[in-house]
Length: 473
Image (tube, rainbow, N blue to C red; front, side, top):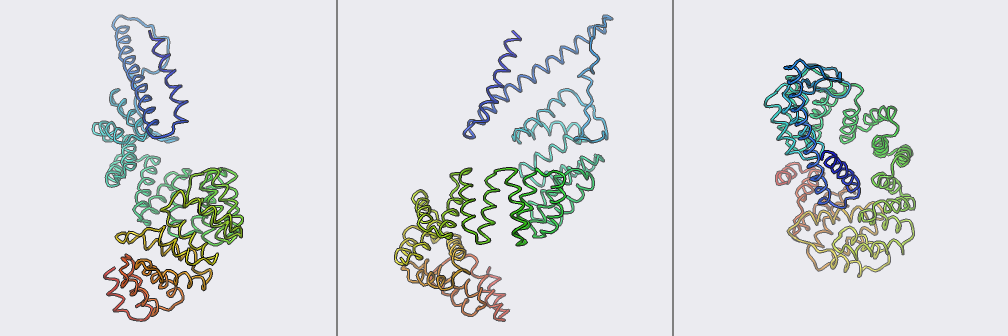
């Protein structure tokens, strides 16, 4: 009977392991997880019953003077749980009941399975009974963090700090607080807690990397590079470290160093994100042939990524292979008619072919504008500016003129916003202000228009008028 039961459990786990790697969607994964949990629960029940039976056997032997124990192992029912992280010295021994320990294990199990509500249920039962069980408290804090309940996470960490003086657990707590403050864009607090985590556990690299990411986000790239270089010396195969070294040097416009680190990253992993970043680096340098080569390589790993497809079409076109570039963009539009970026890029390509009428028809026909969605206008203006501005002033002017010739008021308004941006770049705030006013007249609901009107007034020295616009903004 037992042989059949355990044979079934082993076979089921083997099947789950094989099927999990090839699961195609979330429903299949959840079904497999449910099957796994049933096996895990069955295993825990067997363990529990065996412990109960073992206790009765020991009691029987003791009462009848029998000494039949052939093992020197510790009795599992007398286990004392020592909450510690890897390589930590025990700070206090917590003696808990077996049932409570099982709840703790279940909490960790559900946490590892990303089932955070269930994890919270079991962990709270434990820490309610053992408030100084620091490891359970830490897992509870991490669970609330995963649920994005940052206030409760902070509360749990505060209790952890109250009861624990273990440097490893304290370091984990500070790292958790650093991640919270980082997510809340409270960079000063994030930096402080990551630094405290590093002081408490110097050999732990996670808070070092997190600290580097904060420095990267706040554009202190040199500081980020110092930390990342140190991490690279410890683990040259960490592709995220080499990747962000490349991005940091890229932000500093040190293209040779950026490419060096991106190439090193690619030698470690063929992750699509890495390939895309290498391609972007070449694109930013104006090496469109190499950029197209890498974007095409990226599509082999992520064939359905529309953004990479658009980049490939754009760079292929800019590299001189205009026929293929246009073909790529037209294929994207045929499958994604509502893609604003692809439509705008195609309109620019039509302009390049001296087909202005087709270009404006493309804009009016294929880009459907919802006047109640102001962000669409903003996106269109930004895209147009990205593709045209600071490349060819004459073409920029031609593009604006085409937009202004439209019968659609929102397209004309877009042209005025775009022209206002250009004039601000050229330090002509008076003329820019007129175009921003015209955009309002055309009925464009551009959410940032008061800001740019105020900025134009500010550049002209009209501080009070600027304040009026900015108060509206």
